[in-house]
Image 1 (cartoon, helix red, strand yellow):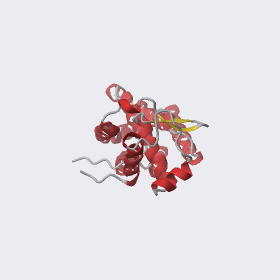
Image 2: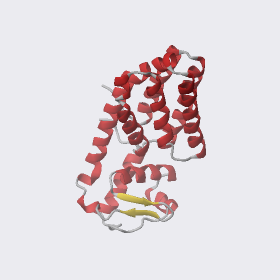
Image 3: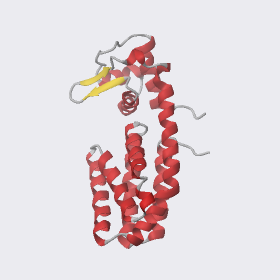
Image 4: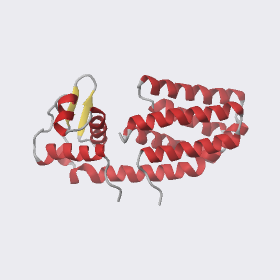
Length: 226
């Protein structure tokens, strides 16, 4: 089994402070980010990833403008919440395994079949996702819409039926908290390459670029296909 990365180790340590040592009780606000990062001996970026991971599991609640609080339901979570973390990772692996099978081909088909309006939409959605990343904003919807525009332009009914899977994969990957900044930057570069091939109407280039994008995403999230 792959050794947990630093943010995962930090999430475990933080949960131990809550569940085992009772340093923070349900409903209590955590110390500010700088103080907590210093206490745990990690960077603020690593702490943010750990907090996001625990928030996904319902252990913590991040309230915009107010801070981070221990969930009042934290005592209901068994096994430190990390069996759920592993379940999320397993689902992500399966989702991205499926994406690597059909999304590169969908990109090639979209290059061949997209109408002028559909091609413009693909490029516009790609630019919107890039703008969100550069501004440090939530890119979930823009990223999802970019991939959905490609699938629609492939004009394949059965690929279109897989759109909910694409949406779930995108949303879960971004919410998982694993190497968020690295994943965002990889996405920015990969989308730029994809859009370049779409502008050229180069099916083979788009297919390879999408395959690379899937591989980069899996690498950044620490997912492996055996």
